[in-house]
Length: 295
Image 1 (cartoon, one colour):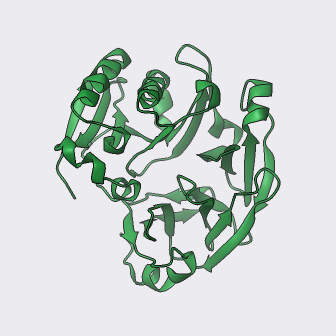
Image 2 (spheres, helix red, strand yellow):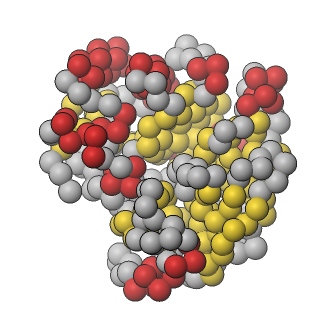
């Protein structure tokens, strides 16, 4: 879609300095396209070659990009700065093996704070998903996937997550997180899919709507009444292996494809932007069924 440039930083301290310099050149969170770590824990950040183009980049555009990082790189999917400046991130489960992921996530979170941003969403890459939370770079890290929670999405009142190999969606209120001081307790079941296990959650809430990719189709939910109520607003039964990872204002959905497994959608491809003039999931089936799946 546009040329990219990859910056290499050997340690988290270099990430902090490098991002500060790139901000001076015009980089904003919109321009962070991919963030990956290699097995040694060194960081690689892909940004547009032309930083003047950053203002035109949408979340859906990022998700449709092919990563310029080829080889053994373990990518972040999203990094969130939560109330109290704690940090939540999703990504390749092998990030745990690098040793530097918490420091890098916290460095990115601190950089986001300087841009008055609460999160950054990054491009799609195939991997086994993981989710983590920590207070800061020197504190213990909670591996949420080890508790069964994946694909964490931040709402106005807390954190939503699907449960591995389950039809259930759970919510953790920020007040409960503050009370317990850890996300190991306080999760409440808020929704049950009638289309089988939830395999993937859309990466962000937009206009209080969120799409869940399930074993037998797609479900859109309204989360404006959390923590008390989640309302199903649309249902698209299908068995094609398509999943929604995001959307943009104006109606386009970022649609990926992969292999349906009971625990998740695996081997996901970069997303394609599929238009829907009225922003309705119900208008997508014909277009989605016409899209070829990758072999």
